Length: 126
Image (tube, rainbow, N blue to C red; front, side, top):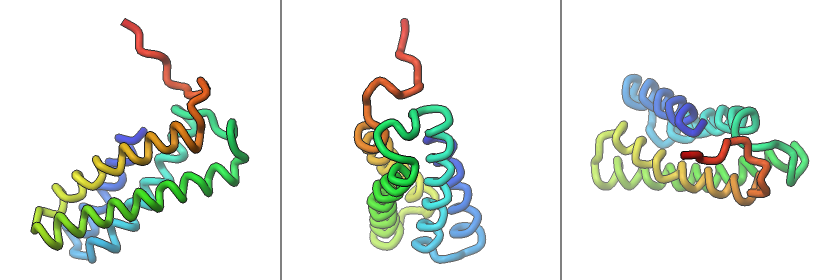
């Protein structure tokens, strides 16, 4: 689900920041926010059991609080890569997305949704 959200994030960023020339910080925030919403919907449908630890309202608030930290991380990486080190925009976005992916997944897994066996992904089998 993170991969689908990453495609949404990077696609929006590519269209508006790279192709249309909008400010990369602004578009980075917009694309990240849209991707976070997509990720949440997909995650509660296919990965995590929703409303196990918190009410739906609290769960959504927590997802966005965790994501706000992720957004800040994402924007800092974009600024450092593009603004300071002059790395190409799409490469910078991929780097930022990769870093923030781990933050979002693990905090959601262990804090927001809880790692109480309610995760829907089947265990690895050989």
